[in-house]
Length: 206
Image 1: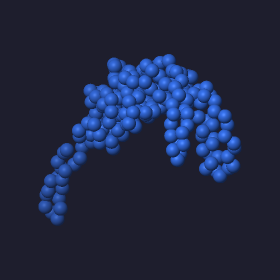
Image 2: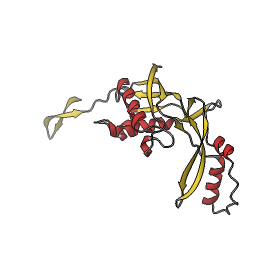
Image 3: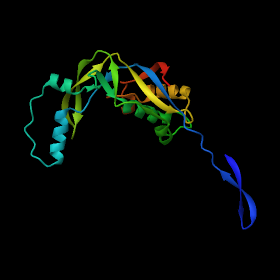
Image 4: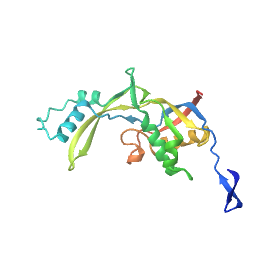
C-alpha cells in the first residue's frame, strides 16, 4: 500500500493508495491417483428426456423394462476423443470444499484462486459394472447399475494465481480434497468412502 498526499480545505493530509500487484498465472498438471474405487453416474439421455417431459407437463410413457447393460453404459462420462472421463469441475469443487479442513481459507477465496482446465478429465483405469440397492423418491427401492473403477488415476490441469496461492499450498489443498471430499458417488463428502485420491506427482507447464 502506498501513501499519497491530498489537500482538504487547504490542509495537506495523507491518503492511502491501494496498490494491486500484477496478476501472475501459472499452469500445472497434477497426477491424481485413486485411494478408493471411483463410482461414476452420469445423467443418461433417457433420464434427461424424461425430466424435460415432466417439466413440460407431457404425458409420461409407460415404464420400460430395466436393462442393466444399457443403464451401465449410459452412466459413463466421455472426453472429446472418446476416452473414459469425469467432469473437471468436480475436482475443483472438491478442492474448494476442502477449505473447511484448512485453517484460514474460505470457499469464496478459493473459487477465484485457481481453475481446472477443460470440461472433462480422462480417467485411466478399467471399469466394471456394479449393482446397488438404493432408495429413491418416497423410499421406494430400486436397483442401480453403474460403472466402478477399482483402481484409477487422472491428470488434472490447473491454472492458479501465484499472488493468491502457492504451488505447495495447491498440492496440499488437493490432497486434503482427495481425503475429505473425494469425487463421484458415495464419496466422503456424502458419508461414503469412494472416490478418494492423492497427488502422486506434478508437472509445471508454464
